[in-house]
Image (cartoon, rainbow, N blue to C red; front, side):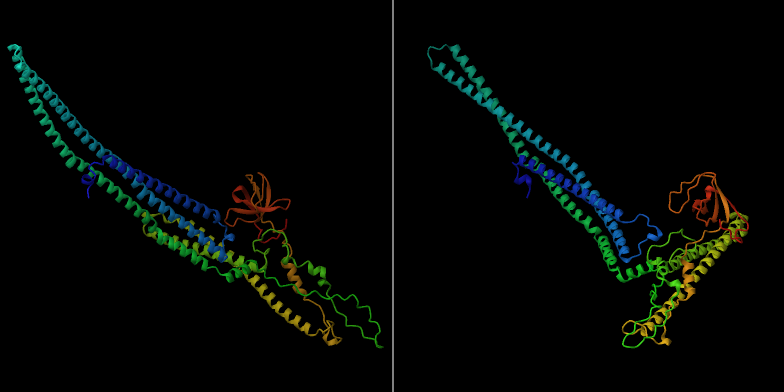
Length: 549
């Protein structure tokens, strides 16, 4: 099957067909471009969605702890990876499909133009040969007619007796001339005819078949290129399927990791205060001086007097229930005494763990400096060993400070754990006494008349004092020095203290290494100020003296 043999007379139709093929290629390229833009926009919208719902930099206390939240953030991460794979698909399509189609379309247009120009040139040459042959044919026809006229004239004069001999000779010469010219036209026409037939054979059996063959090969290459682009389009999707499957598996794994029991336990760990539930309100008998009326002819003995501790009146007890309502206001203290016992224990434990990590870093740094010092002593060209002792001394000082800080926090933690244990024991004892008291209660809800079973409401006084001491407002911290502001500070953030240049304030807490010092103004306002903004003067006996400002 060849276009040159089968379609030798369909030049115009082949020209239209090849143009349609190029138009279809451009149409597919436009489709790929729009699909590419869809993939890019889809990936961009997915990333914006992930960015919108994923926290940028969560604070340490705001980190997701619930399994449902952790699973959601894991799903967001997987979705972000999925968006990255859509970008990979867009990049593959743009590089291996769209760019290739546009390049090939440009080459195809140039090649088609060249082949069509070659075909038109061959057709124009054949038309010229045909025109030359037709001209020679017409000339030959004209000369033959002129020769026939000259012959008729000669025969008429030759048979006419009245014609002179010169007229006859003249007619004969004219006949010979026309006959000669007719013979030359005949030879020319024969030559042109032979030439045209040869060119026509060459045109339809050599030149045009070759041009059509090139057009056919070009069109077949276009079809193959489209097939390759179709396959490349699918390969771009198939290549990311394994990674997309992993992303989907990660989402399923995140969904399965949600544990409702663990979330409930986290709620307990976050909000458990460690307080005991409030005890029963005591019965306050205001009718102890009123005797029962006589009934049934007998006088009943007065009910045993219930001794009520005045400290446990309703009003007094009501004022101590703030842990179950609004917490008292006050600034956070270093030992977290402003927090409920359970939360205070957790905070102290977290701080101890952080200090232990910092201590380990300092110990590792000390060991590294000692090794470096030994190396410098053995090889002085590598460094000066005398430059390391100040750094080693500084590291040792940091280690000692961290150990003291850990010991201080561990003592606070032991204190908290001891109080929590005492509360648990007291609660268990209170529950036992409460059940015993209920056993002595009569079915009608009144107490028996037996003096040995008299109920006395006398809560232990030490429990009240401990409760009051732990939850009363914190007293002001003692001043350990004073400072002068050398730069102004706005103090817009929570917990900071605004100051002007030249303000003199009391120091109530030194810089712990974070660049902030706790200070108090003359009016009692407290907060943190940048250490680099003040000039600090500490009192020498500040640790031994307890002076309240």
